Length: 109
Length: 117
Picture 1 (cartoon, each protein chain N blue to C red):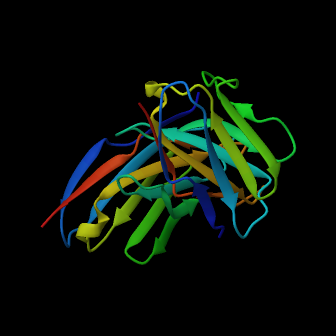
Picture 2: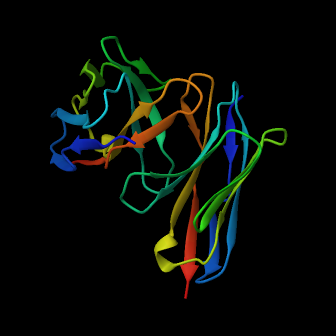
């Protein structure tokens, strides 16, 4: 079957580092996406991984292990504006996205 | 990337009326567009895949006669919610698919918030 799991909510402190984990089971896996969604807005693209390893993009990094069906999004030097939901989504053989329920990240001063 | 617009950004309507939502790909010819619905504090739910020039493919549980999708051109797809009811109140988001093999990314429109009274 197709399944995406990620934590419902996480809390972190401004300036700190947080890692949001995602596990997936997808038929015909074609890559793993991370999106950021602020309340009342549409998702915006953060990262895409299709090969094993770490992709770094500024303060955000994303990691993928295909053999383990596992990914994480790493956010460094957290800012208050990073408070949002982070959606993990895997791409299947038809290029459709299978979405996780999202992780609500709360940043505290 | 691709720039995607939606119109209207929000709409309030009476129960029983129909509402049309437009999704436009402004700088990219989109063969495939997706329509999502998102209820408060929930993730995106794919409603249908819209392919230019052919009938949309609906996800299980989505009534095709209630949610009419027309993808008549490579830059425009429309979703019409027919005989809307309060339970149809939701955030409707479209996306366009960029790329058909290897790297494929969806670019999202800003969403349309529908409130049915």
